[in-house]
Image (cartoon, rainbow, N blue to C red):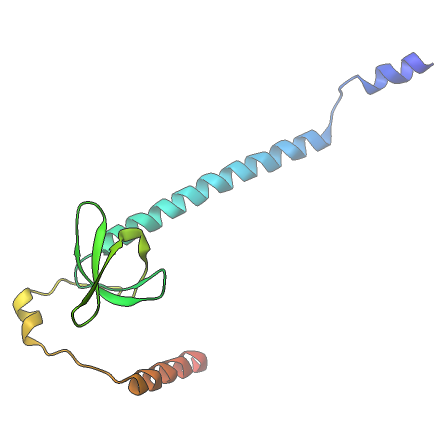
Length: 135
């Protein structure tokens, strides 16, 4: 009788849990491939938006304007008048201007820089936040 029970256990018939494991593994692989494609699209979008004159925020929260980009992915970012940081392209996390167009150099020199006091900036940002919540 014991040999009959052992033979039935080792038979290897239909196993529904094995199908479930294979299906979950397939879903995992598909999600990994999809994630890689998404990241590569985001990196490509960052490269196309990286042009001189673009307003950016770095990973550390520093705001500035891109001055130039070289072949080694080094970006010169001006954070204040006369203060220029050299960063790697990957250190840029956000572009603040969705549609950046390159302005000619002589036009940029003719327009004076408008300085906003910290109080005015806070007031403007507060008003924008209230508008966003009410919308």
